[in-house]
Length: 138
Image 1 (cartoon, rainbow, N blue to C red):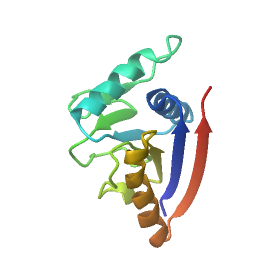
Image 2: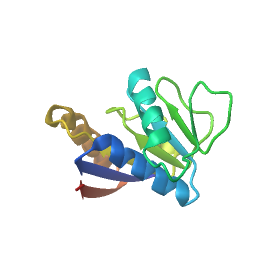
Image 3: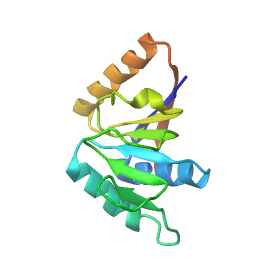
């Protein structure tokens, strides 16, 4: 059964997301990052190129013909990457259960946190294993 982790970030959400993706990748996992739309996908793509000047985080966007262990998308179900799903969309993708793990990044914005609460309740009602992490960044 899919294991779900919620990360409530109290700080730079984009930086945390890049660190999370990097850490999961360095542990040997394939990652699909599901965003809310093209703008968020582009923003994450840009951040992944620059957030660590000393290391490369191999990634591509969903429309790339190239392969990489990290793929960023927003409007379709991925063909592969059934290892780890990082969900930034605010909604639960219909394909989430294909993944071994799901990381839900809880938005900093209080108004946007309501969708994370609904997602948590959805998973809990269906018996998924949930873990909650409160991340304080300095």
